[in-house]
Image: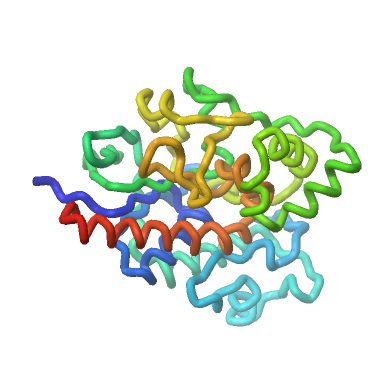
Length: 292
């Protein structure tokens, strides 16, 4: 019988790495794929990021390895002094985070994800087929835009309407409260999201962070089963889609949890919440006798 692992993570940007770091702390069996660098060469590393350093922190389970800590360790300028952080510095910090907290990253591309009777089947670019009970999609904003090529996936709306003053104030209030945002009616979330999204904001996944495969890697059965609202998958409070066992984090969770998911700092909410849920699922599988 083919071995079935608990969790497969597709994407090695801030969200994929943060979820993996927390799962490792919980000792949940997982494999994470991405970071092949196929887009990496096109990134302008000399860019300066116009955000506070706290917005660029990945979620460390021990809450110690922040961007500022990385800068202190390497004698670099620190954004908490009001200085701008170079994109190059952020990418170096992310790489150090991966090497320190997610050493098992596999630099492979997931070509497709299909649903089987009791699990998901992931086909890799080396010909391997992996089975996992749960799949976490963390391919980032680039994956969402590229997925418009899929005939049945809702196109991602990248236009930015001029926000109305009242909606803008309300959206600012809920921006840092993902669960509050999630509890709102779909129509409210849609209006607040349109008012708050900043086209200049640093995305959750900087170009080059994620697996090359877009959301088109999901087979047609999965895509047609997913419920979507405002051109994004509708997620439970634990980031689970309407396809049981399939989760979305990062930019693809913005429609359900708000603009906080567009920044790396959103990992501070998403990673511990999702990893605790997946840990509970793993224990349930073990007690139910379905774990290998």
